Length: 77
Image (cartoon, rainbow, N blue to C red; front, side):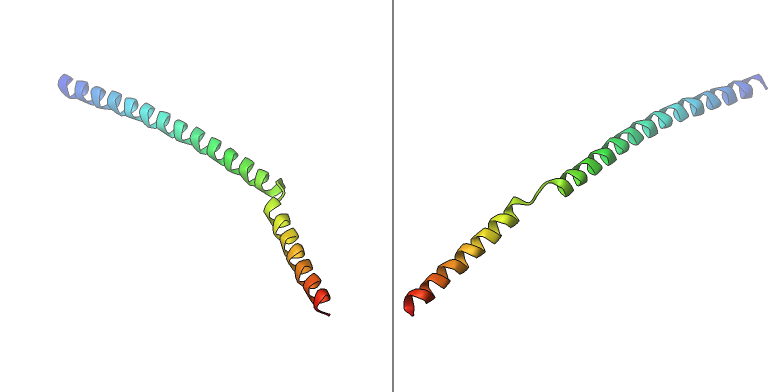
């Protein structure tokens, strides 16, 4: 009976050690996930508040392009 008790004790100890290892991995993954979520939110806020300079450039280019053709039409008349 004594040998069986020793085996049971060893198995229970191993299970507790495995649980500690699993808990550590879960905590590490939770922290990494939280940091990634905060970084994603910060990037989304940055993209939302940063002006789109390319859009303004394209509008200016279109205005200049239209003005050029308006000038040509005026010269032909």
